[in-house]
Length: 180
Ligand SMILES: Cc1cc2nc3c(=O)[nH]c(=O)nc-3n(C[C@H](O)[C@H](O)[C@H](O)COP(=O)(O)O)c2cc1C
Image (cartoon, rainbow, N blue to C red):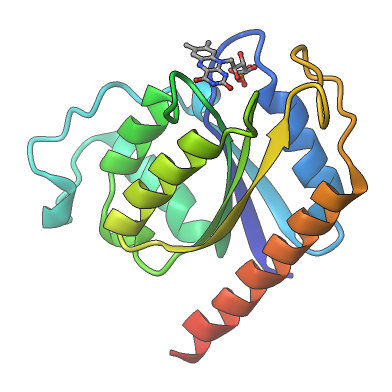
C-alpha cells in the first residue's frame, strides 16, 4: 500500500485542523498507509540553513529529519486553513526548507474556512507549483455547512466524493511518476 502523508499546517492549540485531518484519515484510511506530519509537533524553527534549499546542502538535524519525512511520502495531502486570505506561516517555512524534495510530489490541498479556504488553497497551490510539486487539485470545507467553527464535522456527501476523487488523482499521479 502506498504512503500518504497528511501535513497539518495549523499549529494553534485549539485548532480545527485536527478534526479535518481525522476526516481525511478516516475517508482514505483503507486506500493508503497514512502518516500525519503535524507541523505543531515537528516544530521547525524559522529557516536557519546557511545555504538556500536549491543547493541541496542541508546541515541542521531538523532539516534532515524533515527531508526524510517528505522523501518517505509517496503522496501528500495538506490540511490547510485560511489565515487572512493565505495559508499559515509555519507551512511556508516548512516548504522553504526543501526544494528538490517537492519536485513531482503528488499533492492535494484540503482547505477549510468561511469561504472553504479557497483563497488560501489558491495561494498554496501557486507556492507548490513554484517548487514544482504535482498539485492534482483541492477541495474546500465550508464553516456552517461542512463543519462548525469549533470543528464538529457535518461534511456533505459531495465533499467526501471530492476527497475520494482527489485520492484517485493522487494515485494516478503516483503511477505516472513511477512510470517516468
Ligand atoms: C489569524 C487568523 C486569520 C483568519 N483569517 C481567516 C480568513 O481569511 N478567512 C477565513 O475563512 N477564516 C479566517 N480565520 C478563521 C479560521 O478559518 C478559523 O479560525 C479556523 O478554525 C482556523 O483553522 P485552525 O483552527 O485549524 O487554526 C482566521 C483565523 C485566524 C486565527
